[in-house]
Amino acid sequence: MARQLKSPREIDAIARAGSVVAKVLHRLGEMCQPGVRTLELDAQADRLCRELGGESLFRGVPGRGGPFPGNICCSINEQVVHGIPSERRVQEGDIVSVDYGCRLDGWCADAAATFIVGEIPPRVRQMVQATREALEMALGRCRPGVLWSTVARAMQQHVEGQGFSLVRELVGHGIGKAMHEDPKVPNFVSRELLVRDILLESGLVIAVEPMVCLGGYDIKVLSDGWTVATRDGEPSAHFEHTLAIVPGGVRVLTTEG
Picture 1 (tube, rainbow, N blue to C red):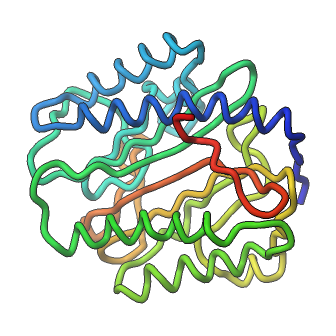
Picture 2 (cartoon, rainbow, N blue to C red; picture 1 turned 135 degrees about the vertical axis):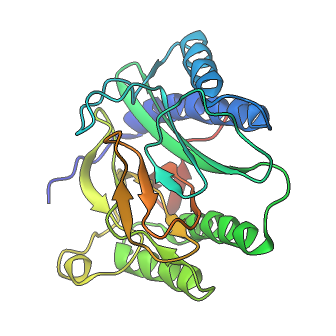
């Protein structure tokens, strides 16, 4: 499996892109209130990114539904990822997962967060929290010399121990000059991962993104060719950071620093 280790200077460059991503997600989280259209969130993301000197990463990416038409992926409730911004308005009781990527000076960064709008059922709130905690657990366990399977196992046990499920068909990824680089970074342990495990080493930059479902992990692609939803219609949550493995631990690159 080819991988492209990054120098400290290159990691700094990715962190500058990551700062833009973090600022955009922070602003969209503030806007994510009842009545806002997802197209408004999309326009704000593009406007703020440009003001900060970057360009949105997702628009125009080819796929089975044609080039992706948005700057953000905005996925609501049972939608897992890749939701297309539209005239749809956010409502009280929704959970809204926003995934955003930016390119700055040729380097890419990518992150996601699920925003809770108003009051939601306790079990859904627990699922959102479990997803956030799974990502935090990964950050706490990453360091040079660790096998990724040990990190993925901890994430999986945390999520499944609470009765939730992790999406199997979608995984994290390496990132750098391109949005998607090797290696693929699953959030669960599979036979394939154990055969081709990932040894974490300094300079490796990856996007870690647990996607957790209230019900089963089976998914489907909707008729727009992009939006991925749970097959059973139960809600799903998504959190993501771009991070670098550095001597002694990990550096989160998608922060507002």
